[in-house]
Amino acid sequence: MKLPRSVSGRLAYCVTILAGFALPPSARATQLKLSSKELEFGKVIVGKTRTLSATLTNTSKKDVTISTVHCNAKAFAVPDLKLPFTLAAGHQVALEITFHPEELGQVTGSILFNHTVASLKVQGQGVRKSVLRANPPSLAFGDVQVGDSVKMLVAITNAGSSSVKLTDTRVLGSGFVIVGLVSPLTLEGGHSFTFTVKFAPKAAGSEKGDLTFSDPEDPNLVIALDGTGTAAGHLTAPAAMNFGDVIVGQSASQTGTLSAAGATVKVRSVSSSSPEFVVGGLSFPVTIAAGQSVHYKVKFTPQKTGTASASLSFKSTASDATVTEPLTGTGVSRQYVRLSWKASTSKVAGYNVYRADHSGGPYTRINAVLDLATSYTDASVALGQTYYYVVAAVNASGVESKYSNQTQAVIP
Image 1: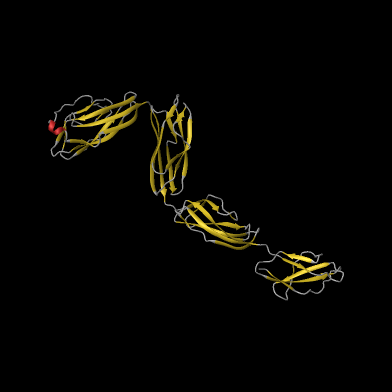
Image 2: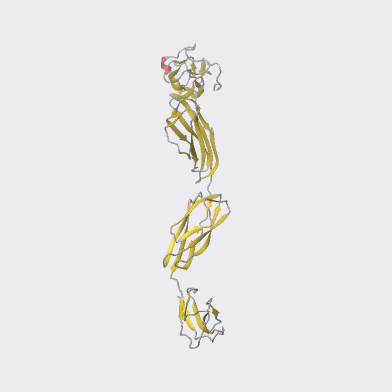
């Protein structure tokens, strides 16, 4: 039989033994059993009531009549238990125990059922009305992807006139962390302190918690915390980049792609293991919706000859928190062709230089202005190519001579 759980406004404190009869001594030790040996009510404002539950079980094979309940501290009561009450063999009853302090200070007592057959230690502390206020009074972080985090500001204020020293600060609930607050904290009257609470879920699912501040003479200030962890997305690994041969000091660029799958992914940063490879085209953090992609540029500027290898590391909220991309390229020496020829025996104004990709032409002029010297440097050559050159003299009237003999240059 379960008793009513409501508490009457006119509490009848158990300070006397209620009418009934005692059980035989042989039955007192085994017939009634409480679910707990002790109830801790904590801090309760004077004049207020806190209720806790306990279960009383008849462990014998016979019905037991509960005829007396004795409370040796008037702040504690069992207001809903109507005596005498018979508890059937093997049955149990839920009891509502109340703590109603009338003055400040610690209160300790015992509640005895049928004299000493079953006893329950009870204790609590009467405290003054709290002067602490929280703004906001609770924090709801909403949906946060596993691997990501959300921060919220909260301020606590001492609304009283005297200082309050918060000696105990506790956070309950997975994934909730205090940032910027060190305990103990002393708040002068009328002053506030603002700090941050971060929610970084470790797994998908709803998370609830409490942020509790305690002062030796005040009731707890409790800030409710709530958030939901959502499944992380997947960041596809970008394809490897090979820049091939690049002249030392010059640059070559390629485009890369990052794609999200399953859920939105926030890419927080990217780092390169070598200064020869530089990433551009993205401003971090960048958010990629599921099924979408973003593009970026990688520039390779070799500083010396030889093969260069490196990798990019993308850090994100994805299930694979770090994704890497291998990079390779080869720095090669700058190549050019140095041409020289004998001066014409005729009076000339200068020379034009011509180049062809095939022996015998067709030839294309490569000097922008008339060359007054008898030499020319062609720096616009490509690796692995073969070029064919001829020179023509130009007189003062702008008339050009026949081409000179052809010369060949192979660029390794």
